[in-house]
Image 1 (cartoon, helix red, strand yellow):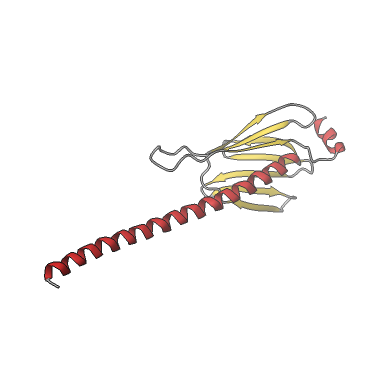
Image 2 (image 1 turned 180 degrees about the vertical axis):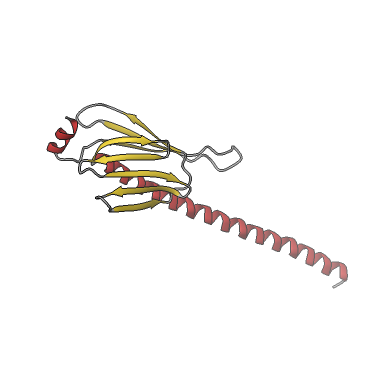
Length: 165
């Protein structure tokens, strides 16, 4: 083999190895993004179900600023959903000094919004978790979380009658 042939073989192998390494890095990055999106999606589903259950067992739903959603219960406690940099934190006031905290790692969220739906014995509430708007060059915009729930639907008839009076 001549020096020219060896140089050409080394150049072709270098280009081939560079392509393989860059593909491996891109695949690893894509795999990490898919895993993170899967974690956020599963935690978002858990948040939606927990929020729906709290509303169905609650007596009132209010906003405390854009970042905190407060659901009062018939027993006098409250569930407070606060948005932070890591996701949504649920603080459940059980008694005087007892609290329970749950963190839903859902990624960035912008604000809560509440709409009252159909009125009635168990009024419908539509709670929306608004996601941040990203640049057009960035990832596609994340969809908002929308939860429909009837306030107090899981409460016994006696406690709903007492709370509406």
